Amino acid sequence: MTELDKEQRTRIGKVLEYIENHLDQTLNLDNLAKRSTYSPSHFHRLFTEMIGETPANYVKRRRLEKAAHDLIYEPKLAVTEIGQRYGFTSLSYFTTAFTERYQHSPRAWREGAYLEKFPRRYLHSKKSKQNSRNEQEMNPETRYTRFQWVDLSKVKTEMFPEGHIVLSHHFGPYTQELADTWEQIYRWAEARELITKGTRLLGVPRNNPYITPLDKCRYDCCIIVPSGTPTGNEVESGSFQGGKFVVYEFDEPIEYSRRDILIECYSELYSFWLPRSGYRYLGDPVELVQIRPNSSTLDLDCRITAISLPIEPK
Image 1: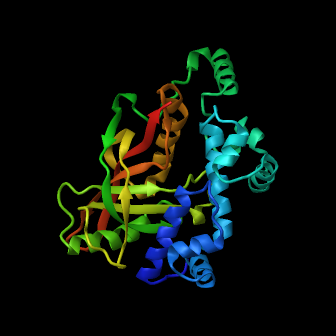
Image 2: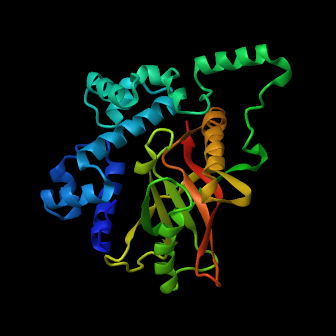
Image 3: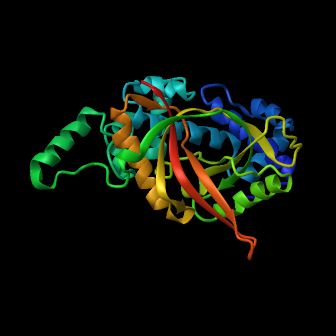
């Protein structure tokens, strides 16, 4: 990824957010360039330098990734409906584009082909339930309790308040390198006395690593700040919608380098808790982050205290 100046990153970042919220609408070059205030040619060049792919390819990839996720976790939605939800105007176009990317049709993916990439089934489907019964009949003495990473007694639902945020984007694997991105936005807020004991630090993984190539994954480092905090073009600002979340808090904060633990916990929440909870997921996960400065080195120790999913009743 090419390093753009702060103003350019901020403008492209706002376009990324617009894309995420309007995947069902027309997202051509002229439309996106207008959001950035750049000319179409200049916007195309800056976007490609920052993201590593053209606006058109990025939009198509995000639509297909969202559809791949919903085909698994939204079993009541028809394949055609999922395609339309993400801007595919016909089933044939959706099927062709999806098959080119994932080597399986949307229907085959939904029926189990996704397991080539995912570690466990989503238990809602009839096929999953039948497989579960077969496993229990074959191994009656070693019945799988399902939850091996998540302690159900610590899973809770709670309301997160909405708020104004400043944020910085990280592109690449969701590992320890994220500390550098956190440092940029944390030091900016700290220098303006915006970091207090009660300040909420939120990490938002925008992609599912089972679906998205690691080098294309995006992670937003967000700090809740008072509404009206002036930012100019120095940092990107936005809003956190808040709402109801299912939250799983760890006994000890997890280092970013242990993404393997986080993925297992997410997978159990999605695959085992969600189908029987009475809720459906609404969007990207939100990670509650703890940052402790090291006074002797000036480094920041960044860890995740809890993971959460936005939800609503089915």
